[in-house]
Image 1 (spheres, rainbow, N blue to C red):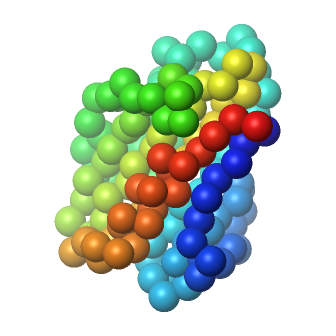
Image 2 (image 1 turned 45 degrees about the horizontal axis):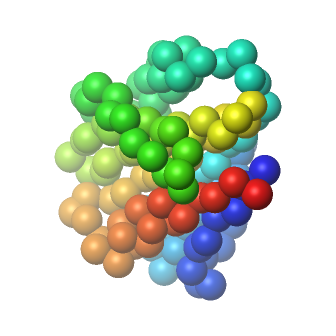
Length: 127
């Protein structure tokens, strides 16, 4: 389980998978969250599966995974850039829990919406 802070003006959006939320005033900016319990899913396996999934969401070139720490937990980030949007996938490993957060940021950047997406991802904390 996890906690995530988002601004009060965010709304949930229809989604076929996961939970999708985003700023009410920026419908082209969103954050989709997936979670699963799988202590056997290694970081490497998670990166491979995430890279494959990201390629179905974006036709942009996917940059190599970057190591990160989010909320004190080991994480990685994958980014795919296109002329019209940036899609960032953040994978977080929290004991047996695995979280994937996918942000879709419009281009040209809407500074406020994009900053809110980044802040929401960075706010994740284990319960």
